Image (cartoon, helix red, strand yellow):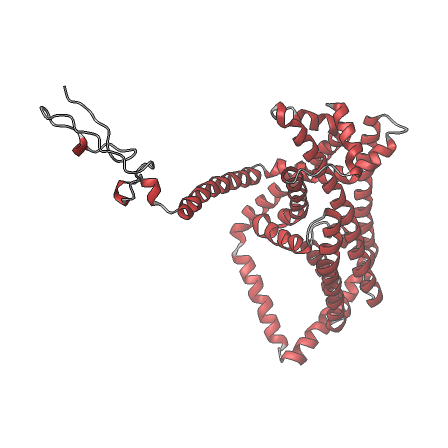
Amino acid sequence: MRLRMPSARVGRTDPADLPRLGAPPPSTPARTSTTDTVDDDPTHQPAAWQVPIGVRTASEWAWRLLVVSAAVLGALWLFAYLSEVTVPLIVALLLAALLYPLVKFLSRALPRGAAAGLTVVGTLAFITGMLSFVGSQFTSQFSDISDQVGQGILEVRSWFRDTFGITDNQVDDWIDRAREQLSSSDGNLGETAAQAGLTFTHLVAGFFIAMFALFFFLYEGERIWAWVVRLFPRTSRDRVHTSGVIAWGQLSAFTRATILVAAVDALGIGLVAAVLGVPFASGIAVLVFFGAFVPVVGALVSGSVPVLLALVALGPVKALIMLGGVIAVQQLESHVLQPFLLGRAVRVHPLAVILGIAAGVVVAGIIGALIAVPLVAVLNAVGHHLLDEREVPEDLEEEVEEADAER
């Protein structure tokens, strides 16, 4: 039977240390020190010991970041795939954050369901009234606008001819080429019309989904949130609950600040249009108000309408003045109102607001710009609450108590 003797090296067994058959057992050498001998030979060290600690730490962070990135990309893909449902729900959630104080006020005299229903109906009436006002203004001023447009087109052609040396024959040639190109693409008109009809159908369906969800968010939002909280383990429900209350407070602050920003945009651009005599000035203000709910991008798109009207109705000089007024209002929004007003309301640095809007536009276009700032605000507030263990602000304690009662 082969005897197995311990190795002189600490933590290893070398085949050379094993005794041969028939040989006497080796004698144990006397200890020369009370400290065990450590093998410093790199070839005898475990593989993990040969990798520097910095490289091992970086690799562990790298694969974890890859997993997190894959999860985020998967969530974004799912959000885009279900956009016909997720986008209306987000719009309804933002409207609920804006209208919730009104529902609480009406609930003092009315049942909660009646207060929520009256608020939704009032919101629909307000939106319909504003759009009807725009339509009536356009209809009443259409004859004057058409006359001004005809005269303005002649002035624009004359200005281009005198400024750039463009003849009427060249302009007519460009118009004929545009008509030929349009007629050559008649085969795709059916597909384009079908896509437009499908988009309109999605918009209508999304509108009704948003209104339906808005009613239930206002009517029994606390119960819905209580159900969501119960999906988490018992040990984490309190933190999830308080995080949700803080996120709700950030959404409410964002919507209130956005209303103020939209009002300033509409007032500024509407006043410039009225002073210059641009037709349809009151309707322009309403369009700018609704467009301003999409940060930066909405004001840009809605602000192009008065510039085009000024160009065809009043000539290029007043169009340039109108363009300058629109740019001035947009600069006020981008560099003052959006960063400082929204930044203070949602407790986010102005640079984070601007970068969030830019990232939202890159990732999801207009919808991304709409939800970028509230998303950054919510993540910032909830992150500080969970990581720094901050208490719930005093102005949100009432919401916490109400949600606790529903739970």
